[in-house]
Length: 88
Image (cartoon, rainbow, N blue to C red):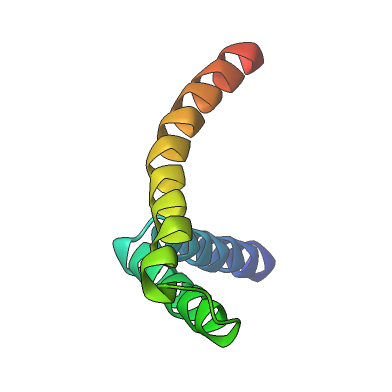
């Protein structure tokens, strides 16, 4: 009986970790940090290679990331919906 309780406890702990990982993946904190780090890294790189207006040009990949996070959520919704229909 103790073995079953141990296994259930491990499953519950795993589920808790999976839930927190999913919460992090979809959080605005994560997305904001990616935007900031992307902007800084691209801005520094463009400055290092002497591009004109590096900090303005660094906005382009950031906008791409923001648009992808917005559109990918919608695409994922329809994909999951279709996938669930094929499994039913």
